[in-house]
Length: 241
Image 1 (cartoon, helix red, strand yellow):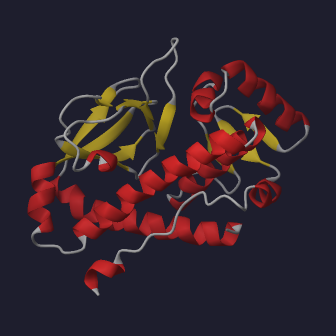
Image 2: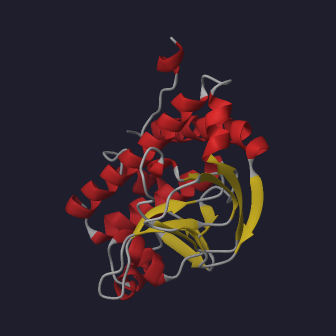
Image 3: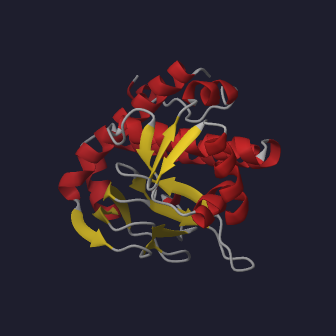
């Protein structure tokens, strides 16, 4: 998929997310959250969806050898808890990387709203399937891609998702993560992430002014990743045909 196609799909997904948030926010209760606060806990009953208004969060796997992989990044505008809809228990801890604000929507409110709005369930299904597809893409990357390509994919994904929410300035975007956290998201050690970032900076492919990153060779990065669908296209119209 080309960069232009990826940008279209990203805007399409963002539009679906916007529609879902418009439906759910009136049913929600806002709550401030702190850095490193666990907002969904593995093994508990999932009683709500969380709309991430401000801040960054991550879904973490179980700890092994003192490390826990970052399985999914949640950025402003994302809906947290979609992957656990229909499951008896929450599957992964979701932890705030930064301070933030979430809107808590009880599942009972979601059910009540769905009775009066036929688009709600298709939207929930589409966006939850996006999470599944993102997980599959991640598994393929970890199996086949080089460490540098995994890092480039990560940077492109973050930049693109922030851009459709109006965050960042073109190729420059915030990345409030340390090297260890980036490594946990890309399957590397923090030391190796530091080495790769240093190489990309020396080669003038990226520029780092913490907490901001600028992609100086974004077009080349996108061409390099063209065979990988960063974001799958969605379709909610099938339910209304």
